[in-house]
Length: 406
Image 1: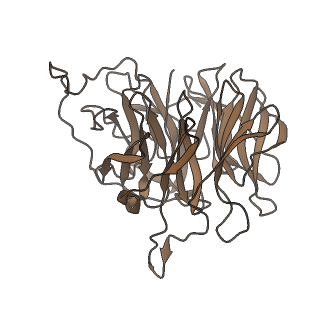
Image 2: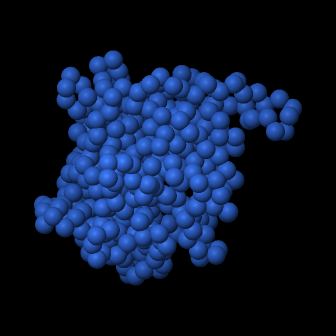
Image 3: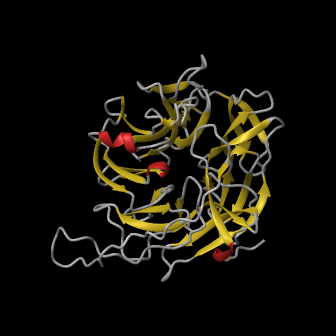
């Protein structure tokens, strides 16, 4: 099916589940109409004035989405060209599942592999033609766990999966052929429990994997981040969190190797306690600097408002500011990587913020938010919404968005 733009009037948008290990979807009512309203930007002669906003090198935002259509769920991939004069979403409509992680193919740059979190859904899509090219299947008794990564030559595809047939939910890092997606190996060591996100670094020599850890009530080890040699399977480095309540989730890594990791409450920590909100049901953000070989979790009063999962993360390398979203707290936070200190927050003005990524020119954070799947650009220096950049319906309601060059 070629891509089309759905009729938003007939669609009641849904959002992905926040709780670690919970079910795939949580129904959401229609969102409020709050949208950021920033003043016009003029560079002028003031050196402290905001940069002049220009289109042309921003890129295209993609992400998964789900809506209720005539009482039934319909799944999309939303695609928004930020460099269009008036950006509007187009969609791929025959996906069949909520896309969680997107893995661009380095040798076929118009295509990507999309994986479901906690489900059988995985497919290769052509983002230009707007269609699903093929379905990728797991082995019996297993489900996809949201993320994958191609080797630089495109010959292999690594993806996280989980055993469900035996009810163990044991994590598996599957190695697949990058062209046929046939399973080549399922014995790749993750050096931890419940692997989720994975990114190849060092020209494909090392796979960085977040291991969420076992439930708090189990003897399984807690969360960690493993740097694994792809040739030998040996652990080059395993990072451990001091806070054992952390369920390691998503990571962003700079060209120099600085890493930011966002996390959810560890599985088994309840959302409520004795009928009241559980103060321990919180997300977190942590920073790893290879120069000091230290993993530090941010401690700030704002953490009390980082309810549920700290979901999506992006790093602005020129300033080393790290941005993260907390949907359940209606919160976007901005952190100084070097000090681990909070430098800015957007609280309440962007309802239900989920995906966040950087435009290709590195000047703006692209945020997808609200039950109505809005999208807006935030200036990476001032953190202010850029006037005229709000897209009322991106059709991206999943956990992430990705800025892509099409």
